[in-house]
Length: 237
Ligand SMILES: [Zn+2]
Ligand SMILES: [Zn+2]
Image (cartoon, rainbow, N blue to C red; front, top):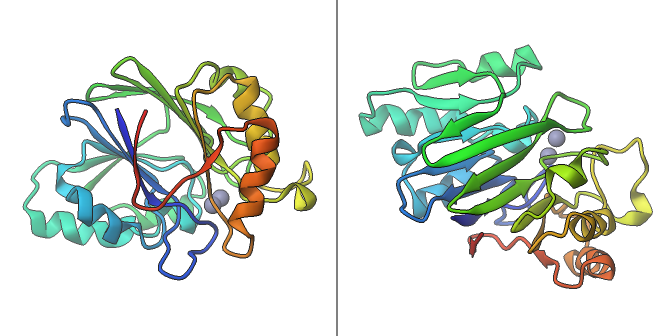
């Protein structure tokens, strides 16, 4: 399958940047899964796949830097003439935010293990201030894992074990990280990739206040092949 980075910032975009959003496409092109729809990502999606061609959407959690562009996406669906609602898998809470996404163009489902076209999706709970998940996608004989927004989760190493590509929340530098923070550090992303024997590591949720090069250097201490998730780039998983 293929991964396209539609947004790699958080919790707000860099100049001309976009927040968390990732398009996964099966080799056949028949299955298109959008994971998160953060600030500024819809414009990037429009460059590579129109919203009405999506198979489903998964929202890792309901923070605005992961969902905000789903609000105007409903208008794109409305004008597209797509007849079936687009399945959206998302957490139940916070209910106040979930209710913002209720519209005729979306089918809202619980966040459980699911099949989406040719892809099989599984989830484990993330360690974050709101209900959220780490997401694994198996397709075309490959395994992709996205940590979502999370601090350390004991089950994550096993969940990500042997994955071909790990997309990890490098929302903090190691100097700013503690067990109580909502994100991993870049150094912890590197350690996770090493322990899980990941085939590749991309760092995402890059905070515009940090120097990306120093986050990358942190991650590479544990996992020398680490890379920054590059906005607009398409990766083979
Ligand atoms: Zn976030
Ligand atoms: Zn978050």
